[in-house]
Amino acid sequence: MNIYRGKLDATTIKRGFFSGLEVTWQLARIVVPIYFIVTFLKYTPLMNFITSIFSPLMGIFGLPGKAAIALVLGNLVNLYAAIGAMVSLSLTPKEITILGIMLSFCHSLPVETALARKIGLSPLNVILVRASLAIASGILFNLFLK
Amino acid sequence: MFFISKILKEAFLGSLSSVKQIAIIVIPIMMFLEILKDIGIIDRIAELFSPLVRVYGMKKESGFPLVIGVIIGISYGAGVIFRASKEFSLPKKDLYLVTYFLICAHAIFEDTAIIAAIGANGFLILSVRLIAAALLTYAASKWFDKKAQNEVNL
Picture 1 (tube, rainbow over the protein chains, first blue to last red):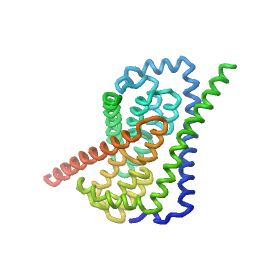
Picture 2 (cartoon, rainbow over the protein chains, first blue to last red):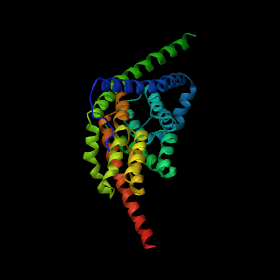
Picture 3 (cartoon, each protein chain N blue to C red):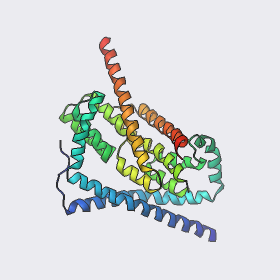
Picture 4 (spheres, helix red, strand yellow):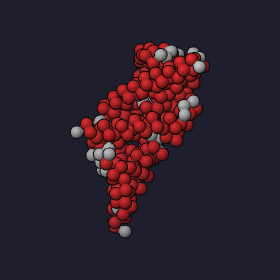
């Protein structure tokens, strides 16, 4: 069952370039507005409030409380939204890697759960499995990453 | 007023440089993937790795949509799953297991490139994701076998 044409020519490079550009555009459309919102938020007391509320929970993963913004956006919207929050929050490389693995396992829940459901898996199962993987990997990465 | 313009400037420059940083990584990766597709390497990789799914007690043909979904993405993968399941009349168990694998690891190059572009350890994330997906699918396959056995015994 072949899917691709098995022929390399100039359109290959062009198609690759445009699909990269398409990803960048889709990403920019979400990253830029979220960056603006989070940057404004940083100068309001609301940010301190979010940080202090989520500090105990995020502490389990070695993350600052404000990282909850990236987790929530990543799960409810998509990975790009989480990226927008991550780049505007000034996190360390370790924190970015921890968030990265957690979000890799568990993101875009509305869209991807619907997809899994179409194939016949129970949405609750799918979300539980993904959330457990995210939580376990977050804890382990925090313990073992330097 | 001065303060607001300072925030706007910070957000403008910061978001622009982040997008640039990601574009520099993502565009070459997507070009590379497209080359791999067109010279048939992805097909070859899928053919090479698909027999591995027999570890899960799956049909060899189920491996193809699995590998394609892991490399290209879950929405594209889902399309291939439906096509393959029609063409080879794949069992329900296979479809479920492919989907379990894919919900843990899909579009691994694109996603990892984006996360690595902003400073994460991409190689570590990629490996952990694949290993976890393989183990989870194994556990799920055992669970399905046990369930099927119980149904026979009833």
